[in-house]
Length: 499
Image (cartoon, rainbow, N blue to C red; front, side, top):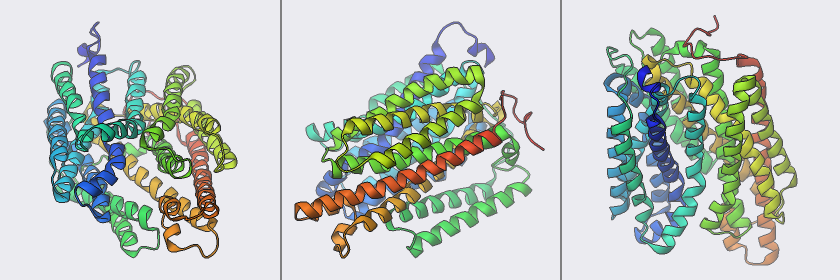
């Protein structure tokens, strides 16, 4: 494996490009569906519950499969499992495009979540094999940027395809990416394993799957229905209990699914939590901004995607700068500065954005947020993944992705709840229920210009409150970075563990 790293050719960078494309496809798939929902409601006769399950089925299988996928990759080979995952992803994409009923589409989306989970859990582990300590930061920058790039491209590409082709085309765009990824992984990625002799931790798999699925489901429902929904709260409690039981079992298991010793490493724990905090801010922003652009400013799906591009541009700038600065000064000050920039830019957005604010002002502060994210996420992920050796690469990276997945769900739920509460509080007293459901419903049912202006102002008020909360979380991330992360990190497994 080391010999492969030192080869003079650039095959590993071509392999990274293919893996990044697969990551873009996953990002596309998480956002492209949003612009297709109205069309699916008409063509498939989908109910509101069906539309929710198109997304939820994908997310629940994704959450369930991450940790088992990492363990299977370590045992049976990451390259082999990556190839299988890409085949699953391609077949599931085709099934989505050809679905004739809501049940078929929900089932195909669940299969798509399985392929996505395996790909997400193993790409990071593969990068530790392909790239050494000097090259991995740049590889992580490419990967993290690819993670974010699919988010605005989804509405952009999806909106254009829906305007010109059948809705199934939004899933068929995955096929050429999958074909390229299959060829590149087959030809350019060498096989790697973890601990091939480790036994399957069946209780650990059951508890982790139950905990992650139920907790993710509960947070999705809370984001949609609020904290007063008893079913959602019960799911969250059950998920937390299952994950608590998982931790207890992992302490006693002879061949645990999760190596809890990883959490004694300050770099692993701090980097994972900080990447999750940055994801909390990113997904909260991406939850609020599309509604702002569409409901308040009247943009269509394609225009919304265009207006989100400054986040990606800022992220790319920040990632390149963060890579260079981390090499010169170490990751701690770079990560802390990135989180401080996120907090500051969100504070500016919360203080200055109104229903009449021009796009130029919004583009300025979301660009700065993107730069902060670029300085934070790739560097934090490199710090975390750099602590994993080959033996634990699959399960370790799957654990990181699982924590980030749940953190993203929590971020959307919490910030969505704050936004909705702020929106409803901002509406005139006695506003009808139709206006209180959502800003989109409020704009559609406003009836007159005065009410319409009140609905838009109320949404911006709620969004600004949610931005302020996300900013406070980013400030907590600054404190965490300065107190938990070591000044310098190196790839030495648990050598830097604290007692």
